[in-house]
Length: 549
Image (cartoon, rainbow, N blue to C red; front, side, top):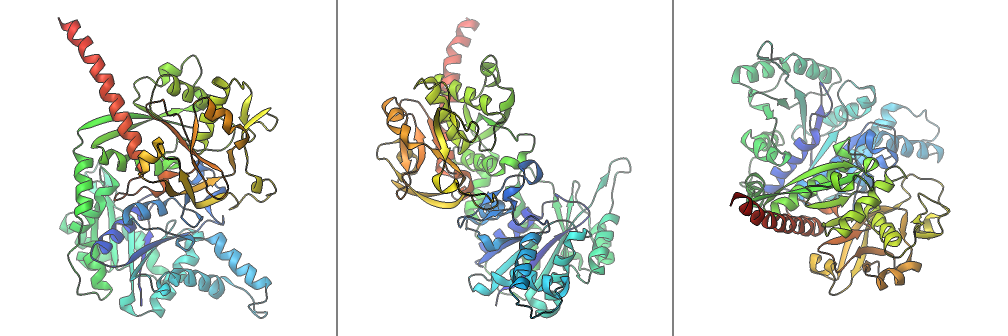
């Protein structure tokens, strides 16, 4: 029988429930337990696939093609295991399932209500992964904040499971904020007390309280929280702000969060955690030997979570190369032929990010041209690859009006066109080409050097593709398709062999990058940027010496 840990949040949103859940899961995994994490989100969207990145950050895609909350990215990056459709459930999906069952007559004419029908479906989803037999411990993060109207059915489902399952099969962790009032020079526990009181009024009693704080919690404050919130003093956990999210597992290890959870779950025999690989990663992260600057060309740069997996992939790749990767955001809407050199000055590499729609397209094309003509390491992902194709078609093949039919349906040279199977689709939710697909890599290519293989599998999220009618012209002029889908012939990778590093991919390699298995494309891109930086500095050094003489 699996055991269940529920993580709730109070006081305010964005406290880091996902990071705490992932950190706890990492510690339990390091002690030899089979652990998975799932996210239950209270919004009515069926999944995040139709949400604007400004609303909810990036849409994370799993191996099996589920469009999910970005927290699942944290789960995979920490645990180095795949999540699935079952790991992310929204209110919309819950209601959709129940309504479909009602329409099918499954409830035999009964009045369908929030309790028990909605809560029963939530509970079914909560224990689904545990009943698979594949996991010893299932951690469930409840989205939103305690007290939100939309979160109530999920909290009620937790209450029912606390009542139905044996005491040592369920643990509840409540994450709260302990604000520091600088004028009074005091940490205040009252918001936490009110948050726990609100949770207790629903019938759910937390076993552990994790306190986000900017200042250390002394023993008096811990005892006060324990007294008023009805938990043991040892179960009040300090969660200080960290320089990087990857330090949080080690912080929680020092606070004994995993040990306290195991004690509550009746697990009294357990091995010491094996975290050597994690510690090695942190050492490289904290003590880099150099620094590179990468320009991220995108249209959602005001919200960092819109490119969360890309930013985390740079951290993983930077540690592998023993450099700090400084990512400079460059808004594509403000790049022109006149200012591109100024906008991209000082960069060691350029990444053109994924996206949808026409806004900012011209700036991306200009940036790609600059990188190609100035031997600046270039990496394009999804739309970024498509921009590289359009730029090459216009400026090398001479097809001045070449475009993607996503942006210009009437272009005379649709070098990027909608996939054939997508043309008849009218419902946009969950209908893109999603999930993992194979890619056959050309021998002797940069892609083969990067992967060290001629066959790989990567995750996708797109409707448009390279138009193979133009492939012969591209390859005859210096841009080759070094990776294709073996079943459909869809171009997956485009590269320019004569360039120091110029590669675009239709898929999303950032979605499979983890601490223990960084994405090869990011590792080699950062290595190319590091080499570019070293050569640039080596050129500057003699000039500086001559000036000094």
